[in-house]
Length: 419
Image (cartoon, rainbow, N blue to C red; front, top):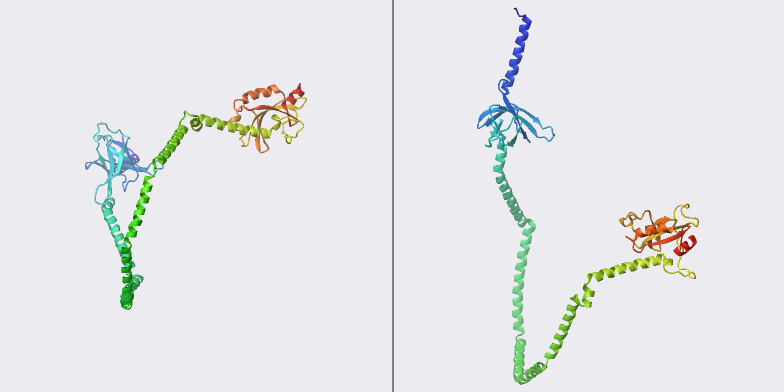
C-alpha cells in the first residue's frame, strides 16, 4: 500500500515535534521514559533556586526541581516541586536544604537523611532549610570585629573630646588664671608673715604684760584652792542628800499605774468583757450600721410623707403633694387609686435596677430633696395588697398609699369613702 506523501510529511512533523519536546524536557532534567515521584518543600526564600536545579544525596543526583511557585495562601512563601526518581525513597523527617553547588553560587537542593524507617509518599511535603551563603558567613565572622572596632572608635572619640576640652582656649586661660591666683596667694602669705613679725616686734611689751597677767591669775587660783575644795564638798553633800531620798515608793506607784493601764487595755481587747465586746463584736457594729441606715430612711420618709405618721387636722404640716396617676379612666366612681410605696431615699435609683424586678411599672418622684418610688395603679385595695406582699421581699417598709384625682389622701379616708 502506497502512503501519501502528505501523510508521510505529517508523520515526520509529529515525530520532529515529539523529539523537540522530549529534548527540551530532557534538558530540563525530566525524562518522559523514566518514572518519577513528586514531592514538595516550602521556603520563605529560594536564593536563586530555579527550575531544573539539581537534587542530590551525598553528591549523587537523584532528581531535579520541577517548578518554583508562590504559595496560594498569599503569605509570600515559595512552593518548590521536587521531581525524584521513583526507585529512590526518602525517609521521613529528612530535610530538603538549599545549598550552593559550586563556587559561582549555583543553587541546588541537598537531601539530608534522617534515618527513619518510614518513608515519604509521593505528594508529601518535606522539611525545608536554607544553607547560609558566603555573604552571611563572612558577616558572622566580621561582625565581632566590627563591634570591637566601634567600641574602640567610641573610646578614642571620648578621649579626644576630653583632650579637646582640656586644651581648648578657655581651659588654657583658666589654667593660667589658676597659676596666677596661686602666685598671688603665696605672695599674700609672705606679706602676712612679714606683718606678723612687725606686729610681734612692736607689741612685744603688750605680749609680756599678757603673760604676766596669766601668771597672776594662775597664782590667784592656787591661793583659793581651799575655797574650791569647800564648793566641791558642798556639791558632794547635795548629791548624797538626793541619793538618800526614798524613790522606791514613787517607782512602785508608777509601776502599779502602768500595770492597771495594761489590764484595762487587755480587757478592751478581750471578747469576754462588755467593753471588749463593744470594741470587737462585728455583729454589734453591723447592727448599729443597719439601725443607722434604717433611721435615715425613716427620717427621710417622715419628711417626705409626714401625714403617714402624724395626723393633726388643725395643723398644716406641709404642702400637698400631687402626683400624676396616669389615665383618667383608671379607677372607680370616687376616682381613688391605690399604689405601693416602695422606698424613699436621698439617692436616686435607676428604674431598671434588679431591686425593682417583679414590681411592674415603677414611678419615680422627687419630693423635698428625696426620691420616692411607687409601683402599681389599682382601683381596689385588694389588688394593691397582692403587690405589697411581693414588695416585702425587697422592701420591708413598703406600704399602700391612696390617691384621688392625683392628690395623696389618707389611706383610712380612702377606704372609708369606698365603703
